[in-house]
Amino acid sequence: MPPAIDSLDHLVLTVRDATRCVAFYTEVLGMRAEVFRPADGSTRTALIFGAQKINLHVAGAEFEPKAQTPLPGSADLCFLSATSLADWQAHLNAHDVLIEDGPVARTGAVGPILSIYLRDPDDNLIEIANLV
Image (tube, rainbow, N blue to C red; front, side, top):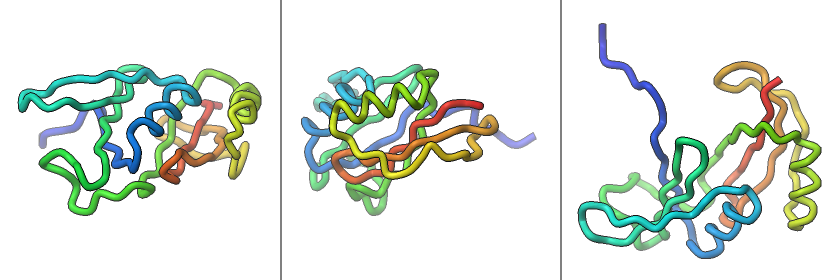
């Protein structure tokens, strides 16, 4: 049997402005920011949610190794939430965040989902979904 991947530990998001990004993901999406020091002694920032995290790289000052072509605005991320989309819509409206599409039926990794779409400060596409 060949080796297999079990789960996603983290992903890296390249951003223009880490402070603005952290504010959006913590205040609007409810994630927690964490500053950490990897083995090389540098200082890094991550966004924590559930058992996952998003490490941030600032465009032009990425950590090595990095993606071949790291670009702000190139990500398309889907997050599952137990909070109803109606509550998300009200919350996003209160933060003046435009919902670009939805609710719309989609298929997620574990089955049918109902999704809304918005953009983060770097214009990454963010999908918030409920399992149905």
